[in-house]
Structures are given as C-alpha cells and as structure tokens.
Length: 436
Image (cartoon, rainbow, N blue to C red):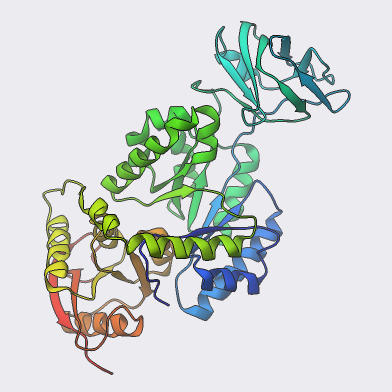
C-alpha cells in the first residue's frame, strides 16, 4: 500500500480506537505509525493495542511504527478543602510542602525541587497557564506569591515553571516500569518527556540499550535552548506545540517550530509535530491525509523544500545520495530505491527531500518499523541481495509491486557493496522496471 504523499501521520490510540478493526481502519485512512500514551491506560491495554497493530502489519505487509510515549514527571498542586477556589488578581497566595488540604490563601505543592530554583520575580503557571502567580518571597519549603492572572483553581492541577531548569530526572519510577514493559512489547520508538538538557537523554539511552529509537519531546524552553545538542543525541524529536505554548508566548511557537524542523532535517532525523485536530481519531487521520496530499501537490510547496538543503559531508554515502537525487530528477525517474540494513542510507535520501518517492528495501523488520516515521520513505522488508544483478531485479520487482513505478519506468538505485555492510553506500545504478 503506497501512500501518495511524503509526510507521515502518527496517530494516538486510545480507548475508543484500540480494537483491531479500528486500528485497521485508521491505518487504511492514512496512519503510518501509532502512539501509545503511557500517561493513561494499563499495561494490558497497551499490550492489546500493540498486538492489534502487529496484526494489521502482518495483514497488510507494510511496516508500522509504534511509539511508546512516557509520561515523565508531573508537577501538581495538592487538594482543597472544598475541591476548588477562585483566585482574584492581586491577592496573596502561598504554596508549601504542608500536605493539609488548601483553602483561599494556600495550597500544597509537594515538590521540594521547585522551591530550590524559585526566586522573586519568577512566574508559576497553574492549570496550563490559566492561573499565573508571581513569586515574591521563597524559602526551602514554601513560596509566597501574588496572583497575576486569576480564576478558578481546583484539586491536583498542573504546575509549570517557565525557563527554570528543575533538578528532576525525566524518568520517574513509573516511567522506568513503563519503559521496561514497552521494550518487552517490542515498541520501535520511545518518546521521552520533560527533557530539559542534553544530559537528560543519557539515562534513557543506557536503559534502552539500542532496543528502540529515542524521540525527545521538545516541550520545555530549556530544551529549545539546547536544541542542536539534543537533536545530536536523539534519534528524532517531537515538537509538543501545546506544552511549549504554555511556557512560552504563543506567538513565539510558530517560528520555533520552523527552526526545529529545519534543524532536524539538517541532521537527517525525523521530526513529529504534535497537534490535536478533532475528537474522532479516524476523522482526524482522514482529514490530515487529504490536507497533506493537497499541500504537497502545490507548486509553492516544492519551491519551499528546494530553498534549503543541508550541507553534505565529504563522504561517499553523501556523494552518492546527492547524485541519486539529481539523476532521479533529471531522468524523471519513478522512484529512488535504497537498500539498507541500519536505515542510514534511507535517512540520507530523505534528508535531501527529492521530488521522487523513496522506496526503502530494508533487511530488518525492526529498522523498517522505525523508518515508518521518516518523510518520503516507503519501506518494504526483504532479504539482502547477493550481487548487483539480484539487487537490481529486486528493486524493480518491489517498485512495481508497491505501485511506485509502472512498466518501462526508470528507477535510481543506491546501495553499499559489499552487501550487508552497514553505512557503506557507494553504488548508484539506473534500471528500468519491466512488465510482469
């Protein structure tokens, strides 16, 4: 099943969309990969969703990526005697470590690490920024604040501390248990929440030990400040626009989004832009598919892509990949076909944003599933070739079978010789697809 678009769709599976039939419908509607949100649901629920995805994958023969999104630390206030209060602009309000139910003048904030970084003038955002407090005085176990933006406030609402780097690991005890379970399920990506600094990725990298790729969720301003280093250490990033819009002025987010997308493209790594569109996931996926197809057929879209190309490294793989893009465009080839084991050849091809489809012939299913999120890449799992003639025959066969090329259409093939050697792209070949 060949998608007639380059951008990919990552859909979240929830209680209403996790039955095998619903997963199949979502995949047919356009979902290329699925997100399991570990902030909600039990391990058994996630296991059922994973089995449903793999069943659809087996039935369609198309690799499908699975992303396990870890919850990360959640800063929340305590509870109120009456369940909720209403804060007026200008009033004093105290946050402290006292576990007693709060009232009109105070509430518990059971996170000592927050008080360690607070200082007068810092703003605290409660309930996704609906309530704002300015810190006036702070101690080891409390903060005296003034209400800047008032409104209703109820039990257990979230707290954000913009621009502050909190001494908190991005992995809670719950996250470590969820991570181990997700790895045992065989997920392809792990989305890491609450990353503030490049070093926050190290613990997750050690625990995952190569069993899944790491996607860093950029949701904190401090992560934006260290963007290049974070992209260098991650396998991909997710731009959490909603979370960024809470801690940053909303008008800053669109420009930052463009900057992050370009930085990820420059590094040749996939980037997910997280957005909420409609309540119905099937509606949302169908609409996104239509929007992407329409946009990518607009001539201005192509000119936008061609306006920027990442600088190539002085290596044989980059030279071959650049040449493949130019040859495919000049010959109006039906597709660029890449043979790859680790995925590096396919990632290089996608980084160049060619105006032809990229067909990845992948020798490992785990690699193909991870690449399901990569722009312009359509993956097929197949055995490695033994010689150039067999490679060419398979490339033509799969180009025809997947529908990316018709009879007599030229294709451009890149591979590494000797076959099966990771990172050895050094061959470019032109072939013509034969009729059956």
